[in-house]
Image (cartoon, rainbow, N blue to C red):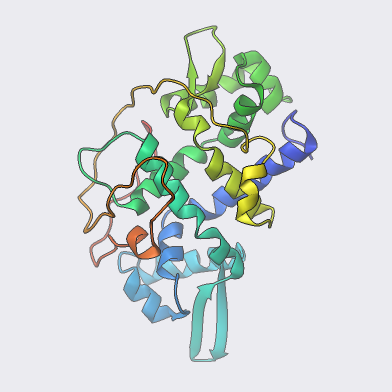
Length: 280
């Protein structure tokens, strides 16, 4: 059943991407997927790689990733069970460096270097705001649109004023822009630069090769140029153990799985901040 007034193909596309984001955004999921980016591991081996998760927390996380089709549980014998990536999870991994690259270029600069894994988690939090994907699709499709018209596109069965809380949140997060009250809304430079990420997520969620992102009917269009906007800082977190060297804007991603997960030590990571500013 359609949830937006966009064409059926676009509506299904948004639903798939929203579902894909819901699979990987929950706390620790990306870290677990990175911990498993190698040969299958026994439960005790995996637990040793994610020591901040207690046994009672790890088991339900693994089950949810298995249910999502990202982790495969293989029972060799009653006492020998391993966990590893499914093919779907392996195909997903190349998208993570793209998210880290976008965050490095478009999120606010923290007062200390952030590891790529935190960049990814910050970005995913912004993308999973309520109605965020549908609003981003609507803004990209229409270029510039009033809140009332956008409401008819994104939430046609709801009171049109309900568009403003999620829309204002996207403005606060720096993904959308407006000149002021009563003025139309558009994607910001950062929001438009999400094109390759969202196009690739769309391809992955549809079971297509990732290089199909360049042909996405919405996000495959050339990136618009607009002035950057100031960002609101959020609470800082402890310095990582290591940070991959910054890369030049416009170069191809050079992150490796070990870089993304290089900060994971025996120390428990700082808890996720769930609201406020462009960084979670």
